[in-house]
Structures are given as C-alpha cells and as structure tokens.
Image (cartoon, rainbow, N blue to C red):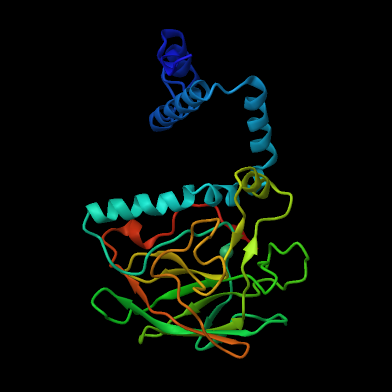
Length: 296
Ligand code: FE
C-alpha cells in the first residue's frame, strides 16, 4: 500500500471531521495542527505498514508512560529540537550571541528560597565533594546585568532531585535556590557536588531507550533560569565537561559553550562560568515559557 491512501477522499473527510474542521466552533489553530498531526500518524502507519497489534502496543506504551513524558520528550530529542528551532528563528531575526539556551528538563520546582551573597545551595549532608561555582552575569555589551534572579537547581550525589527523590530522604529545596544578584552582576554559590543520573529503572523512558539500543543517562549538570528586567529570560544548564557522558547525553542537553571542565582539587570542583544575556526586544522575552512546573 502506498501513502496516497491517506489522500483518498474518505480518509481526508475523516480528518476534517475528526479535527472539527467541518464545524462552526472550536479553536481553528488547534483544528489545523491536530489535523496535520493525525494525518502524519496515518501516513507513518501506512509507510511502515504498522499492524493493529503494533498500533495498540504503542497506544498502551503512551498510556502507561504518561507520567514519564517529561523524560521521553528530551529522550527522543524533541526538547532539544525546540531549542534548535528557537535558535534558528533567532538567527533569522538577527538575535545571535549570548549564552546558549538548553533544555529545562522536568524537575524544576517553583518558589525555592530567595537568597543573596555567596550561598550554600545544600542543606542536607551528602557523601560527596563540594562544587564551587562563580562568575558574572553580563549583557551583550559586557555590562553587568542589574536586578537579576538566578534560579539554580541540581541533583544530589545519587542523581536525585529534592521533591522527586524516590528514597524520600531529601529536605525540600535541597540544592535549589533563587539567588538575588547585586548590581555588580556577580554570582557565587557552593553545594554538595551533583552526580549524573539515569532515567528510572523499569520506567517508560528506560524501556524505550533500551528498545532503541540507547542508554538513558545524563552527565552531572546544574540547571539555571536567569531573569532580569530588560533582558531575555534564559533557560540553560552547564554539564561537567569531564563527565563520561559529556558527549553522550541521552537528553541532548549538552551544548558547545555549556561544557565547562571543573578544576578538581581533592574532593572540591571549581567552575568559573559567565552568563551572557540578550536584551529583551518584547514583553514576552522577559517571561518564562508557559510550561507547567512543579510547585512544592
Ligand atoms: Fe537535570
């Protein structure tokens, strides 16, 4: 069978009706996007001659894996694709330079404590070394960014994040802070050194990665949002450049310019890293994406 089958009058009519395009009401943008989405799925069913059994296996996988969509989406490269797409649109609009954006991941928690100065992110003991990170938050002209709020979050030495720790042993907001930055634009923090981590054993993300012949591991990393009046909100992370998975991140979150190699001395690791923000061109630039995020 040829994919022309999807273009037959009866299938095209089905698509119009299924997406609500033949009705008066409904959201027209959603109708058109959903129509294209269903048509794409139909086309791949024909292209790969997907059987009824395979089709229902896929539906069941999605149903059972729903709580791991936040890991599946980066795992199949779609979250990174969104970054590539936004980068390409920025380049077209001449908005280039600054610290690269990269994936947020599913493990941010809103309302972390707001702190100032050279802060300790960790309130829990952890059998690991200490990460010392510092640098400047600058604009494209090199100016110190004033009034910035640096959101930082990372895993513990077991690769678990507070609020999502299956062992239940972490205090709320351990390794999570929002750092209010002074007018000099400098930041500094230290914390219990994070480890890389893998997707949960036996879960949907691991099942899919193994079926693809891939792994579900990430290098050790630290996540950031930076917001500041007049600047574009940045979503990014640094991954440890000397981690075994630095060049092989299952989530595609590692990017050139975001892979500092820590200066390791004993069980301490030092990272100096400057952030460079683009100016905001429009009100939306200062906002966060509308992604639903965990609240403690
Ligand atoms: Fe992470």
